[in-house]
Amino acid sequence: MTTPFTVAIDGPAAAGKGTISKAVAAHFGFAHLDTGLLYRAVGARMLTGEDPIAAAQNLSAEDLDNADLRTAEIAQAASKVAVIPEVRAALLDFQRAFARRAGGAVLDGRDIGTVICPQAEVKLFVTASADIRAQRRFAELQERGADTDFDTVLADVKARDTRDSTRADAPLRAAEDAVQLDTTTLSIDAAVQAAILAVKDRL
Ligand code: C5P
Image 1 (cartoon, rainbow, N blue to C red):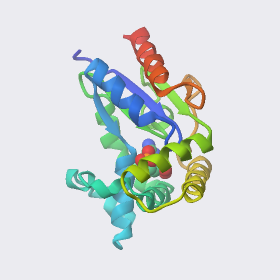
Image 2 (cartoon, rainbow, N blue to C red; image 1 turned 90 degrees about the horizontal axis):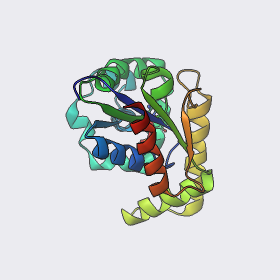
Image 3 (spheres, rainbow, N blue to C red; image 1 turned 120 degrees about the vertical axis):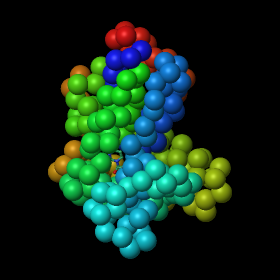
């Protein structure tokens, strides 16, 4: 495929966006961008004392190539820098260009269907209860050997939900024309199949 085709996948932390995005991208041969990594990379640089706006303005590929970006500390820092309009503005062009590249693209984040790519051919909004999402995130962190407990992870998930949904600039919300997938009851495999079908319908 040589024309642009954008799949926008939004939703709160640990709802299953990452798994669904990777599966959709692999199935159709589309490129995939996890936009949370951009905010995490800015958050990581803020934690080293850098001004987050300056960090967002000169982010490089090396900033994204950092295994530590997945830690709980950096997740919180990411959601703090994500509130700053200048940080969001600095990351806009890169995301829009990625979304409209030839050959198809899947972007997952919080504002892809609403702000980055309102003209996306397919929009999905993936949700799950805070409890289920915290269970998934806790299992993931344990697998990586992180020293944490369930209550801390649940509190972190809820704090990020609140910060992400109540910020003035590009808050987390479903686009009106998004297909909703609730992975509280739907297995991730079933959600992947539903996502693939939604894309097939538009191709
Ligand atoms: O998706 P992930 O959990 O990696 O995102 C980390 C944080 O980055 C989110 O909690 C959110 O504050 C921010 N983010 C955002 N807009 C996006 C992607 C992520 O504000 N498109």
